[in-house]
Image (cartoon, rainbow, N blue to C red; front, side, top):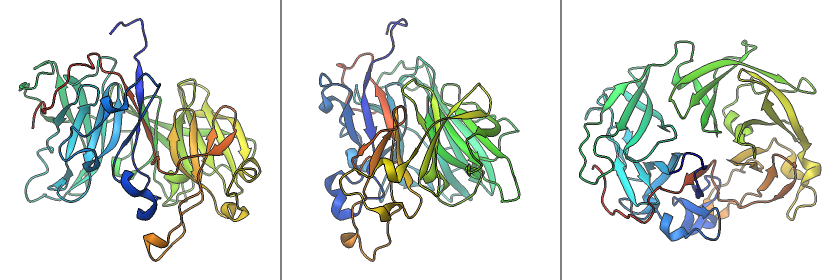
Length: 371
């Protein structure tokens, strides 16, 4: 690919929404969906049915360049506490299984899988990528790295000796199991360090998706009032404070307050100072939307999807005795630039994953690189 040209975005993947009851989700439940970036992109070329068990057996957990990191879902997809995991390139129908780190033995040895991430720079591809895995081993947090570099050059029969190794983590970064994810934006993952209510500062942790390095700094928000509560700890923090990518490609922090106000913060520099960029009172902004009810705003809204230039919000799901009696969520999108709202699809899942076109999209493979 010409280094002077930006890579072509083939489209976006999203998983089913966990908010949807079974009677509403229908055939898309547990099946990632691909939305082409333009009518010239054939969605069938980016089907995930080439994966073992078909598309419904997998969920997207990260993306970078033309690659997706996938975890198996459903019975039979967890091996000794470690999920079935593949890195795949939809544009060429190639995939590679990621084996468990050696700490995940047959007897489990007290290992608890936490999260995994796809890491790589501009040259990322099936012969050049890394997977970072966070896990607990006997109550001690670890980060391991599975690296593929060069070797077989992406051939189906390659045996490049890739293996896991312990990844170095900056000592100032809190333990991985103490981090609450805010999502991913501009190629990096953002987390808030969990603390008790006596701590008055918020530590924001960033995982650079290009280098795989963690960094942390004190989060300082410059707002119009004192109603900033990202530091407030609740079990649903990640649904009320999220990061999303602005249309300029930079990260934004979105915070939803109890009074129905949403605030969008942009970083002033490379550190931890973020300034209020936009805000809106959601009950007023959404009043003209079909299906609007004042009762939807009696409780703080959840950010159910974060995508490029927008977020999707919805009232918290109501408790029901059965899925069949549950009501489909009322979702609306908020444009991060104009702060305009519109009704939104209710099955997009928590994150939208960008996928670039592969360098050789017509060279199809139907077999794994390594099983």
